[in-house]
Each structure stands twice: as structure tokens, then as C-alpha cells.
Length: 178
Image (cartoon, rainbow, N blue to C red; front, side, top):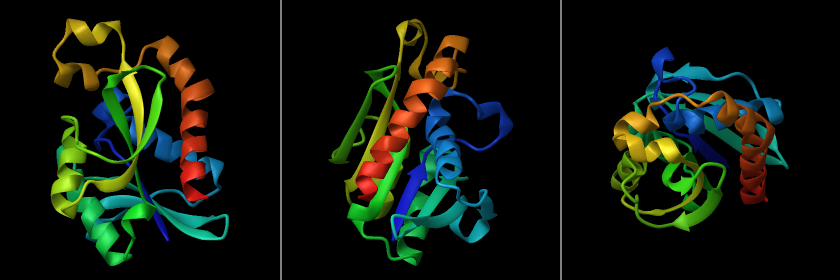
């Protein structure tokens, strides 16, 4: 069984913000794989969707704990479903990577990302798969990081996201599932 977690913040005000790219990719992924719509699961503090891909059971989750407490939901899901660390995939924004760049890692520090920091603290380990989506652009230098990550994507960025970045991120997820 695999657990794929897209990081973001619940509430309408955070939709389409850079920090919610994990939620956006999760939404795109359930459509691509023809999974059921997300349903709130209070006991996991997350919205989840389940299905099968390549004969593997998959859970896709969007924590509802807000970014800085993402580890709480990840830990609940991982423990309940007895997910092995190598079958955990976290998708999130990366301020240190240029917009459009995608990198995959199997372990490492949080690099200052509070959602990843929370997951490492709750799991007691940094050994899990990550798909990091670059969000850095020229505006990142003009405002504090916390304001930048909560800013909306520009029209041009949204277009790039839907045409190139989201499909490429899905391909990276599918590679990890093989």
C-alpha cells in the first residue's frame, strides 16, 4: 500500500497559493487516476481518496491540519494503514528551487520547510520520498518568505502549472509507484 500526501493549507483563502501546490497536484492526480473524490476523514485529520494503480492500493491525502502541523495527519495515516517509509510520498512547494523545477529525494532535512519539519518530528525519521516543486521567482526576493509562499500564482504561472508542471509532477509520482 502507498500513501501519497500533498501538502497545503485548508480554507478557501489558501486555494491557488504557492504553498498549496501539493493540494493542487493531489487534485490533479485523483482525476488522472480516476480515483474517488476527496472525502473528509476526521480520525485522520485529512481528506482522503483511495483507489488502485498498477495493482497497488493507493491512498492520496490532503492534511487538514494546516501546513505547519502536517506531520500529525501523516503519522495518523501511516500508522493506521501500516505504510512502509519507502511507500510514503510527500508532495510540496520548495522555495529554494526555481519555478518549474521538480526534484525527487528519498531522505534529508526539512531545509526550513515547516510542513516537512513537522512530518520528520512526528515520524521520527527523515526517510521518506519527497517530490519538491520549485516556486521561486523574481518576486520571492521582494517580500518575506511567509508572504511569498501564501501569494497566488500569476496568470502565466497558472498556465505553466496546468500545461507542464502538474503533468510532470504526476509522472514523478507514477515513477515512484513502479
